[in-house]
Length: 75
Image (cartoon, rainbow, N blue to C red):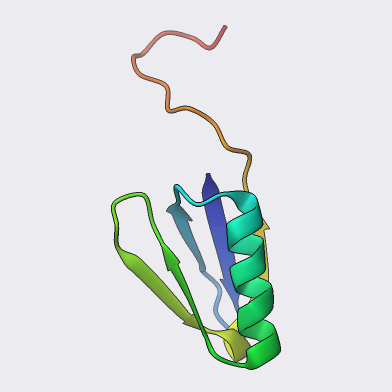
């Protein structure tokens, strides 16, 4: 699932793919904002993405989808 995190006063967003479910990511974001602690998520390669919760402008969660392989046109 693709995760986009907008950062306050920054023109670029953090974009990564995660194996976590939308519910898990949403719960982690809500808990981080409520507690004021760092938001820590894991991407699909096992790397940690850490963002200060007070700098989060928005979080956009994509639809879970399988990766496509090949060069053919979508069916």
